[in-house]
Length: 548
Image (tube, rainbow, N blue to C red):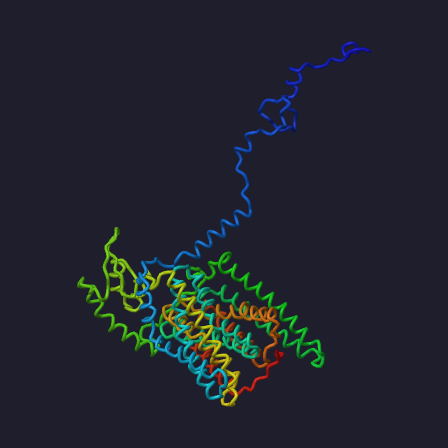
């Protein structure tokens, strides 16, 4: 066999091959480095994994993001001072002196005693007496729940505070609904929950708009968040109307209709609970900025022009100005009495802590004194909040009050039949008007108070947020609980109540669509609620729920 040299072919040497590899031809990319003929040309560099940053895990990023958002939600909106009540005795004293409504706490032992004395054989008169004392007992208990809620709310962010107010504010309605469900008072369950939504949307929201309108010509709030809330309310109303439409469209003589409506209600309840969970994630995590007062899309509130104040507000302003004069004189003379303020020196200067637990720097106090509106200046000075109770005392108060509310609500529900048996008052009026008012009494006060301070977003969070929570959580939760307990509770509500609920949501959606409010809109909402209350007084009721 001939070698390559013998047949005339020249085999290039290794140096020649290297030089050929360095030649560049037209169109070839220019490479300035030297050729590497080593066998490890395509092998990975063992040090590359050390130089390159490893991609972070998606789950880790989500967990880190959620942790950051939770910290932001738990961060107080205002700096907190030390709790005023250091011990148990001081905490109990603060609870007792919290409100004059605590005088009604004496009705609790009376209601309990009358129930156990007359529990074997009660007449309509005795049931009426038990109902009255139980009704009066719920009012201070609801106020104590609101007080404990405020103590927790001041320790968290604004968005979470609104959620806490809405959640714990609905504790009374939830307890009453569960007890009524256990006693198979299905009509009371449905009517009380519908009445609670109507009370929040019309009465509470109307009072907020009216009270804020006495001081501000217009109050602004976030349009995007409000439109989302309107959509959620509309979805909940559709879920209530669908079983009614199914009932009237289907054959009423079909024996399987009741079972089908229950199945539809159970499926809709699960979907509503999913929507509410998504709403919480949206509000607290992904889009929490929409529910903040610092949202740039929020319309700014406008005050009345000079000489054009609301008549009631003019009287209040005169009283506020007169009451503010002694404090201004004391501050200007530098002799703030100990009964009014408490001075403490800190590293950056002097801090004035008022008797109501709010603290401001001396420079801010001086600037507030020169403010033309003493009432607004006082609010601008309030920067640091001092909780009344410690966290263990607050949690203990919530637990004790919740147990007392549960027992008292059971006596209240048990006496409804005897109260309405005489025909002087209908069960619909009790469920749609009286029970929601007493359950929402604390929310009423909170929402109206903050609306006057131009915190209309918080008022909407309490009023509209409470309605959303009842529609998307409480009602489907009660339906699901009835499913578990074997109670035939469905979303087939009274036809008249369903229509009223739909019209109320429609009116509220139109009212808040522009992102502004005034006192006339509040008066319209309150007037509509009064008209509905008068109608419910005479409405005999047409419950379509199945009997247990």
